[in-house]
Image: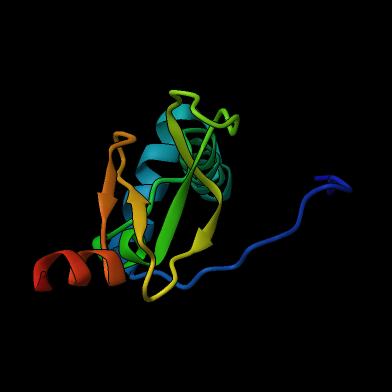
Length: 110
């Protein structure tokens, strides 16, 4: 199979039971397990690359799809930036702004 110039190979080590399920599902579609795994990851990316758990969600600041000031926009996690320890405002998965860090502590102390 020819390699695309704009793509790279990713090798992962998985438990045998996970590989068995990948193989089973891939076989249903006539795909290889690598094609099936690549499709899963591409779907994750194309749907906005949602954080996979709370620890990752709490480590990132989502970006609006429409970055114009004041725009009401859905968010994406593609290109999201690491959250600063004292970030004053964050955006949840529904685009709702939340106060945290220094601003939250200041509000609760006064």
